[in-house]
Image 1 (cartoon, rainbow, N blue to C red):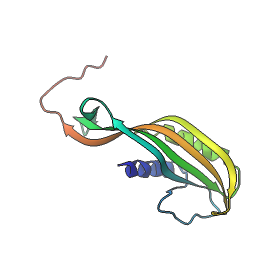
Image 2 (cartoon, rainbow, N blue to C red):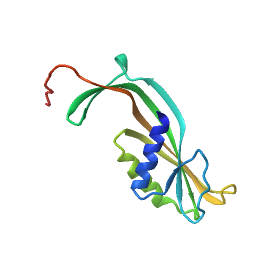
Image 3 (cartoon, rainbow, N blue to C red):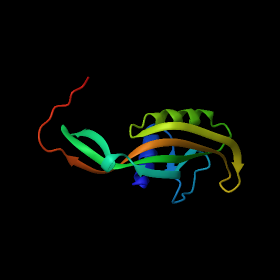
Image 4 (cartoon, helix red, strand yellow):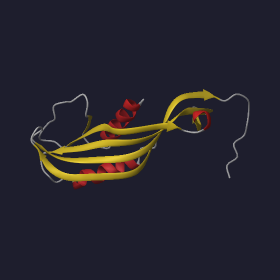
Length: 150
């Protein structure tokens, strides 16, 4: 389930034009390009409420109820690049993360930029703290009802 969250973030970053990979399994980085390595730094999973009820969703015009857990996630977004200038990519990361509907970003922290001798690139450790609803089950509601929007 949490692996799917990381895959979703990588896909969202890539669709926004940011070169991104999952940190594990390790891949050889192209030292001529800036890349963001995405991984899970921490996770706290808790019950989302009575009976793990999350809420309602609409799928193909059918109202369904969702059951699952609530996750407070520390998402690692380490930036590796050929130069120490990564201010633009940090802004792009923040904008892209804020646009992912399944996550509620609470904070975004960027560390110092330092040279990483292992990768032979400059590295900036970034962490986004987010809340996510981790859906385990979606079931169709039986009977008829009306939703009142007010």
